[in-house]
Image (cartoon, rainbow over all chains, first blue to last red; front, side):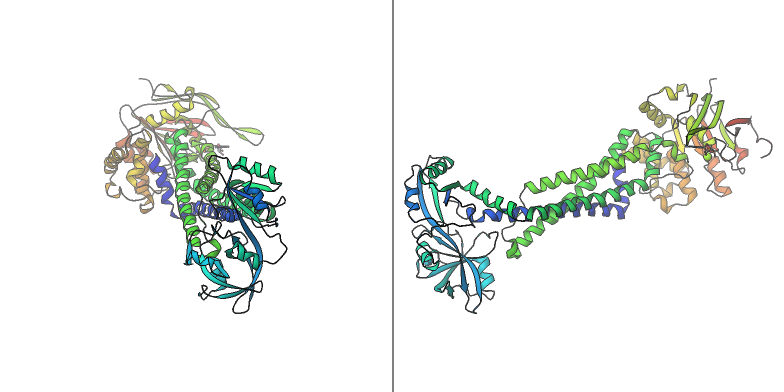
Length: 378
Length: 233
Ligand SMILES: Nc1ncnc2c1ncn2[C@@H]1O[C@H](COP(=O)(O)OP(=O)(O)O)[C@@H](O)[C@H]1O
Ligand SMILES: [Mg+2]
């Protein structure tokens, strides 16, 4: 009876397409919104993931995320290096600053000063220029998204900038993970950064450390905290802190939550209504089948086949569209740079669609099962 | 000879609001094999209710129905459904064909429901449609057929599994006189046999002469039983 159920469904073109559309639309909306949501949250951890070699981030006691920086005295670096279990430790400055572009526009930027000797914290991949050039006097590297923002016409490399009224020259473009705040990032050597960023003697923002081979980063972080009174987090903890900060301090979860809920509700509404219309249109036929001698068991199978078919095709189509949407966005828009569809999200959407199909299927089935076969003689 | 169908003390009451409306009052009747039996009577007299109870799709309030020796309402729900599938062919007034299946596929439904492969079932349905003179329409959808052709597909569906009892409710109501007569002729020719019975509810006075036996109902009772129409019709 399975093929009969499918023919009943596909034969009614308009409703069939309506059902597929409903499921696909819901799937697309939910998957796409969840993907954007997760990718945005992950941007809270972008700075941490930019330095895969560092196991441990050390900061001021009150520090919380990579984007909120509180200065530490320069002596902190040696104290961290002195803790047993620490393999290596390097300084990093992260600070807000202002650049004046050649056109005279003022633009807030993030200055990141990386260790002069190892360049730890500088993104791996260069889009333009040579990594060595960061040693040039006054050299800065700009992130790729920032380069397109500050120099829409191109020609970033070689341009002179006024960075906090100091002379700086763009010597390269790096492929950086966009951060949540998406400010332009200028990378420079730690010693240079001290020149660019004015202030007191205390300008060290973070100490990036790696546990010695054989040492557990979490244990080493604890040891650093105990020995120095500073705050030390493992990479995973600190990444999580960055994500949590966004969750706790922005309206993003609520906004996306509402959209996802809406996707579900609209899906249930379209699919539920169309499916019950379809069932109602075919109720006489179902009644006739019951009279002829099709058992309720087989009727259940038929409705389940119809619901499953709608669910599978609609879901497949929706996921395809959503992945394509996210992928196209990531290729073509700086706002979506690095966005992808984490594999968990299609699974979540599958569960949601399953609930949706189950709800509408059971509702429709109730109507069919309640139909008395005697009604076909009426 | 034991009768094909035995109806004993059957009553039916429907709940209407807070009270019950008695639609059948103690029906006792036996239907013989090899006969085409007409059930006639005014609208509302209880014909459809009685034929539904005989066909095993409506529980009587009281009484017993035996079809070829099986006490229908003593069966479990599932057994009753299986019994209907194996033993009873239905022809509904509105045909109730599946609009997205072809004529042959529609006619094959009882065989498919019984577990026969789609191919074999439609092959058999085609043979029957051939006997019903609509072989050339076998691959068309119901909406591409005339009313008379659809009715024949419905008859094909009722007969494809060679059920021993065929019940029809007003099968000719929507047809013109000639088509109506041909349907009755076909039913006689294809459905009737020594060990089989056909019951037709009708008030189509154009075809009364084709019956072996005519039962007339009034107000939930059988008031006439003969080979001709009761007086006053
Ligand atoms: N499900 C029902 N609920 C209430 N009354 C019903 C129901 N089915 C039939 N009746 C009533 O039973 C009577 C007989 O109906 P029916 O058997 O359809 O008569 P006929 O087929 O002879 O026209 C009618 O008065 C009808 O209104
Ligand atoms: Mg009737």
